Image (cartoon, helix red, strand yellow):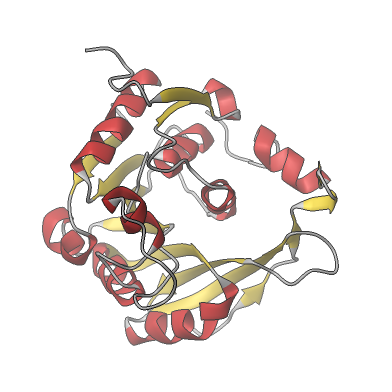
Amino acid sequence: MGVVSQSEERIDDLLWRNLKIIQNPNWFCFSLDAVLLADFLLLRPGDRVVDLGTGTGVIPLLLAARLRNTSIIGLELKEEVAHMAERSVSLNNLNQQITIKVGDIKEASAQLGKGSFDLVVSNPPYAPMGTGKISLSPVKAAARTEVYCSLKDVIREGAALLNSEGRFALVHRPARLGEIISLMRDYRLEPKRMRFVHPMLGREPNILMIEGIKNGKRDVHILPPLFIYQKTGVYSEEMAAIFQGKILKEEW
């Protein structure tokens, strides 16, 4: 079987260090949010990482581009999507570093091992059940709406997967910040770093990135805002640098 197994699939360039990713635009393609989260994370040599709801595997691929000496698991509910992510991992010769597993976020700690990881990340569905329209496509519905797991499920299982000083990082919508902080503290994940992302100067933020430490002390740092565009259609200097991987300090 070839790398691309369906007529709707295509191979896209991730820009970072010549990485490629297989995507099916009839399901979904990775978003800017995933790229921003991969850049925001504090990644350390030897980290054992889990990406909850990995989708096409974009976050594990980007993290592997940041630092070779890590072990990354991508957990994905939909078997057909997980298979696509596995093929992207093979395409980039990263099988020794990234493992894609089929599994339910609600049972992640039971499947992968409680207290076994240094870093858990997630770009979960943003829309709570009962808000907006749910896609007729099961794959799109799983990516956009809390059909198969809630924000509470993601945070609870993320906390359970982490060791005593592990880090948990999430990208979400600013409107749910209060709920996010409350849930994190319910599961002993103390928020330590936050960053708001704005479409451009003068516009309200539409993306939130937050990182917490398990059993950490209350001491949160609000990082400078990130602006996607300096003007309509023109990326800011920082955003252009993120796309090119220039901000990342870790090397292969």
